[in-house]
Length: 279
Image (cartoon, rainbow, N blue to C red; front, side, top):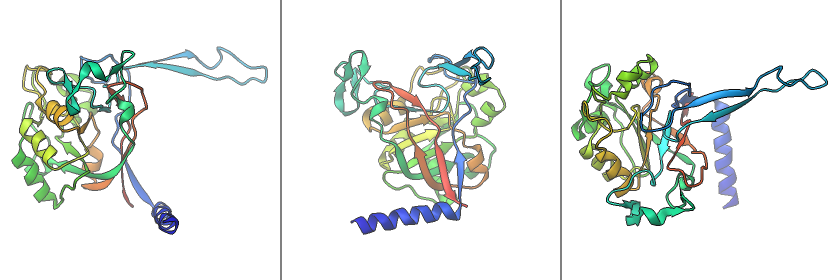
């Protein structure tokens, strides 16, 4: 076993030495960035700036303070995030998951760091459009057609990321359109989520604010894909991903790297996912 481990480590180091290309899939955290109105906004301030306190040798240090909801910016949903009829994943009573006012069971601290095969489903590219329409549902036919067009396949345990092109509105600073409260947002519906669960994926993500389709004018009133994935299937959800760069590079399969902050009892965590491919 030690020889096998040493050989594996050597192969990994050789791959790094040969050169790797890293695609950053996380959004830049900025004050005023587009976000769900259901969560506390991101705020950043500098309690101490250079010159406020100067050491005897002339040195100075600045420091920061941030506040934000755990479902703001690029983030991951823990299984404690959504319940159905008072139950969390595994038929766990939501009240029984609490300990000292925090979700000791199924909280984000229970998500192990991810080092997995990742698959990008570039739906607009497969459909021959720049981006999907507001409120458009990504159907099972769309998902299967995308896999066929790309020549890729999903394996059990993969992390599947679905590009709708809607992230272009985030890049353009068009927060109202990105949120889509009145116009809707494209994404998978209940059928698409059930299909993903049937592929036995470990996690699913998208470039939109709530992962799944938001109907025009409905906001976050109904989120069936969250129920299917989090509550019924134990599949993590990653939202507000930046998928434009990796899509432009034509990368559909990669090493996916993600580690949530170990926030005990929290329902989610900001993350900075990485997609790693050979140079």
